[in-house]
Image (cartoon, rainbow, N blue to C red; front, side, top):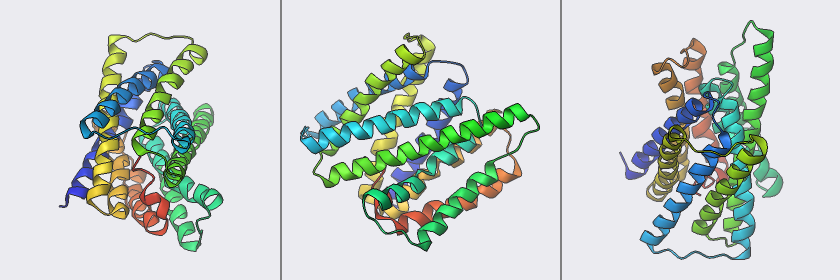
Length: 295
């Protein structure tokens, strides 16, 4: 096994565990804003430490500031909506929808970056949508059906915002933006955005020891996810390691079953090969997908 694949597997594991952690945090009725605020604070400190250890300079040019702030806003709202949807519907469904941000990347890069869109990419998108359909399970309760439909929509918006984050970071790098500084701006946006969300929307701003445990674990996971994926891309082919890292939905499916948070239905077993095929198919037909997760 190559180093690239090994780092991608580590990113996969941490990403799946973080999705489950987000789910456990959300169902407790805890403040979403405080989690984003706390994780952003520790993430920012970690990125400053990494930059110091690596002795890499921070550059605040116009492209870095403009696209870094844009990417930070997209990722902030993407994760807030992700948390809201995780609090209402199965983590396996939400995780699968969220990892389908590759579809949004293809559509946005076609519109804004003039990348070609052919029938092969259309086929890849169709495969991804089939995976979601296989996970969508109808319920007898009409009220639950309405809630399910609503938060599937919320998760879909979160996925597209995650795609917009990938496109904006790529555009920033193409314009000469500094990667490390953009990461710092993105993490800092979580501090500000999380605090504002907690104060204005949730009307509460308080960190308890219980919240602190979630924040600390999620921060460790997030820093590991980002940096292990960077190492994976450096040591392996992006078209191979990124799909591996994006298969975290498998962890997000198995762990809740092991913890008796969800049941493992037959549709979920069938969804695995379908979703995996889509993950490995699309990066080979879209250049942006090979670098959207590097930053």
